[in-house]
Amino acid sequence: MLLCTAAVLTVYLVARRLVGVWPAFGGALLLALSPFHMFFSDFVTTDAPAATGLVVAAACCVVAAKSGRRNAFLLAGAALGIAAGLKYNVAAGATMLVAAYAVVLAREARSGTPITVRRLLRDPRLLGFVCIPAAFLLTTPYALVHPRLFWNDVDSVVLHYSVNGHPGVVGSSLAYTLQLMFIPSEFLLSALACVGLVAAIVRRDVGMVIVAVGALTYFIVVATPEVHFDRNLVPLWPLLAVLAAGGIRALFDLLTRLQERLRSASPLRAPAVRAAVLALVLAAGLVPTLGLTLQIGAIRTSTDVRQTATEWIAGNVPAGASIAVESYGPTLDPQQFHITYLRFGLNTEPLNWYAQQGIQYAVASEGSYARYFAPGAGPSAAHDAYQAMFTRWTVVRTFVGPFTNGEDLCQDVILLRITSP
Image (cartoon, rainbow, N blue to C red):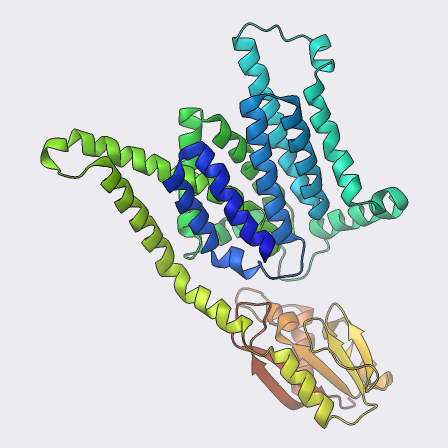
């Protein structure tokens, strides 16, 4: 939570350096009010900390490009390495350091400094690129202690995102990413970021272009695999907020120019115009996000349906019973029950297998089976397997309530008594 708050502050500081106070305030506020960013802010996963790490690295790369100093490049490389240590695919942000170095070289070339291979090889600023793997290994010592296992794990993650993902999250990652970026609650942030991107290119704003390079590279990383998960987009959001600040500044400048052309007919002055634009931006951002923000707050303060199921099962199912539980199900006491955990779902075993194993109960969770019943899911063996369970086995109790790590106030957990075929 604190790291996500730090991301909002970092967005403000970076954007203030690039486009001014009020646009920076607007961009930071859009991130602070983003239901998507808020939703993942209290998850114990690598995504939210990596988002903060990536925007801090972006800030360091901007400073490196502006100053051209060796120490700035060393700091930027270290920040990128630490961010990559938090979440591996954030390493794509290294393109920002490449862009920063290219900007410095181009500026020196225009000033008459010759750019030769020998000079480049002796350039101490290149040590910034060495700092990336050094900082990564410092924060990921496992890669040094067990390199073979580390690379096997990396390979398995790549394979997982290529072909072996969870059912229901396979398909066009590009379409999925764009859809998530432009849902009503995130539309303003993403739309202003696109405006900021275009403005940065047109104006040749070095700092904003470097941030845009990082955002576009990370977008490509998450939008190209066969498998997609919403939380992988979290590191992109602070970069979008910085670009959105640039979009607000572009709108400010546009309205100011219009006001100057209509000065004789308008009593408004530029500060008033800018204040009005900021107020409209904030109002437009609050309207679609407020309901979802309140819903997320209600979920976070509610009792999780899995906790309700855990307590009821503990008090009503005979001790020593054999129970099969799938992912997103309740956490049962192995001292009280014989637990069989099926990570990839109850459908991974045939129905007669449960009785053969002496399993008496099964707990199905909507977090696992709902994907096979979702609109557009189509026919599948998994759908038929769950349908057979719900038809042939006896429903003991259905628990309805929120998943505190979800966005739905109404999720089902179903306790089934297994009957022999």
